[in-house]
Image 1 (cartoon, one colour):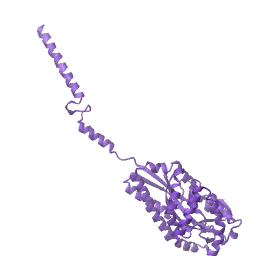
Image 2 (image 1 turned 30 degrees about the vertical axis):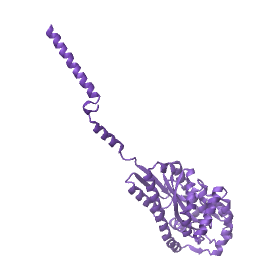
Image 3 (image 1 turned 90 degrees about the vertical axis):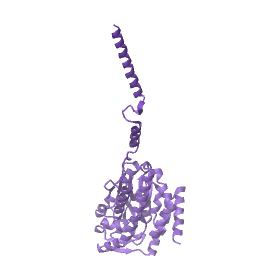
Image 4 (image 1 turned 180 degrees about the vertical axis):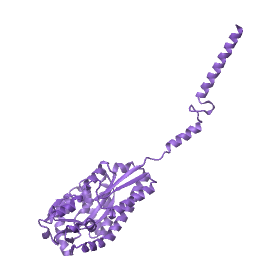
Length: 363
């Protein structure tokens, strides 16, 4: 009996010792964690977890120009720079030739965030941000050198900043070129335009401009323009020489009137929320890449202009270059349009800044 009591007591002591050992281990005794690893191992695991690579982001970049245009070449340069400098954290997909919809639809997609970036003519951006329409004012720019000095300066920054309220991050102004008019007769005076169905980008400013010159402006989207000229929906249109040649308007128009009546500039814009979601380093990569691509595109446009004029003549177009006197007649009718489309205090401020900068740039 005593022997059995002694065995029972020894068994109870053994159970208690095992229980105490388990409690000590559970509380971290011996530097052991509850998962069986050391505290150092657990800390290393936390470090690995926080150093996971950042989420990759895609920039879908659209424009309306063909794949062999300066705009497309520069857009792909932007892609190359961004992907290289971000080490693949940012990927750029370029969509040329309006494959993502009309120019307005591409702009809306960026505003709403269903696409990240687009490069569009100023007139396409104007319905979303009125302040930028000043760039399109007729007979405002004496030459490209003055144009870029002004748009890359304080007046241009004022316009880019005004885009943020509409959900855009304005990045920069790209070159389209001075515009010329094509038709089936020369246009050397406002009288020549009376009653002419003139295709314009859907823009109140351009509609008012051609109404002031006596024409009948008809808004037609870029993708539909060739057919509209071919079928007689419109009689004439305006565009830079590069666009006229690459879109083969010489096949459906016989005359080219070089008036340099306005400059077709493009704007590169990004969805503001997307831009804000990027890290400061990624934002700087985008800004720098856009600037380098923009400078490349401007140079390509400048080098190609004289060549395109020659090609259009070789394609059979009859070319008329307007004299300064002939341009003056159009300019006189254009100045009231400047005032009509500068109604708000902000627009008046920007226009005066542009006038002043243009004057200083010519000194």
